[in-house]
Length: 247
Image 1 (cartoon, rainbow, N blue to C red):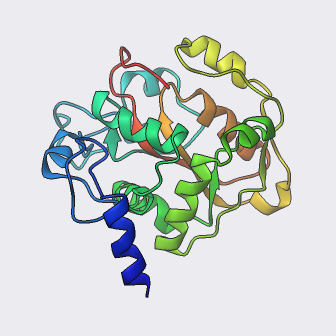
Image 2 (tube, one colour):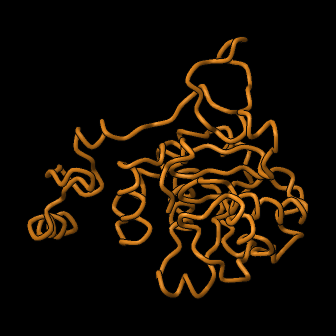
C-alpha cells in the first residue's frame, strides 16, 4: 500500500533535484550535475576547526596541524568537522532546509556528517542540537539542528539530549554580522539545565553551518562550565573563506 501511495505522490509531485530542478528517480536524491557542483571537505584540514588546507603539512598528511586563528585563539570546543563547504551551491540546500521546510535530504545530510567525523561519534555520549529561542522555534515550527541530530541518532544509536541546553534570550539574527558582533550577541545566551547530566561526558554539538564559531563557542563554554569532559562540533556546512556570505 505504501508503494502505491508513494507512486501516486510521485505523479502529483514528481521528484526533482533541489539544486538543478532535473527529474530524479526518487525524493531525497540529487542529479549528477547537482552532486558534481557540491564541494565536499576532506583532509588535510585544521585538526581543531576543520578548516581545509590547500596542501598537507611539511611533516606529512598524518600529522595534526592547526590553522593560524586556532593557534592564536583556540575555540572553546575541542574539534569541529563539516562535510560541505558553505558556498553558492550548498547555500540553496541549507536555506531550503532551514527556512523552506525542505527535509527530503535529511537522511543524506546525516550520512555525510557521519562520514565527516566518525571518530567524534565513536567517542560521544550524546548529541546536543544547538537550541533555538522558543519565540523563533514557534515562528519557524522546527529546529533544523534538532532534525539533523535526530537523523544522526537514527544512524548511530546515540541519544539526543535536546533539553539540557537552553537558549534563554532571543538573540538577533547573525546574518551579515561581524565576528565581534556575533560574539556579543551570544554573550549569556545559553545555559545548561542539568549540569549533573553533562558532567564528565563527551558531547557533540549539532548545527547547520559553522561561520565564525560564535554560537558554538558560547554553547561549548556553558557545557564545559557545567563539567562536560569534551565538546565536539558537527555541522552540515562550514564557511571556508571569510568573504563568504552568511546566513
